[in-house]
Amino acid sequence: MSRSGADLTLLLLGGFRTLVDAAKEELARRGYHDVRPVHDFAMRAIAAGADSASELGRQLSITKQSAAKTIAVLQERGYVTREPDPRDARRKRLEVTPLGFEVMREGEAIFDELRAQWERQIGAAQLATLEGHLTKLVGAVPIRFDTPGWLARDLDGSA
Image (cartoon, rainbow, N blue to C red):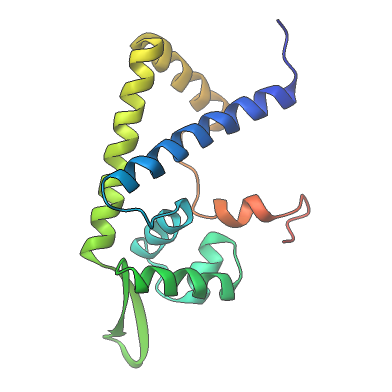
């Protein structure tokens, strides 16, 4: 059976959604019912150096206002804090809390478990082949933090 390019796109998106939805459900079972994919993207960007709403917005390709809302939610839930900047007392820097790092590690472990589940379903060799083909097609560099904003953009790059 021949498939179209649109079918391939939907299969790849379906694989992504299946893994993300399963990880979100498992995180909830483990007590992290309030974590969403965008929260993980935001915490990873903050851990990598996005220490303000403006910088987080740039990293995620979302508006400063959206970044500020995400930060507020993450602060409220104890995943990030605003700490005084040691170089400029007037400025507050974003930092991921130990709880935030715990959630990210838990999510990584869940994705490893889901990968192992797929490996059991289709076999180690088939999964390795799939991963090898995807790496050839999309490159070895992991997805960038700007995925939340990228998903909302038009083809010309505008929101």
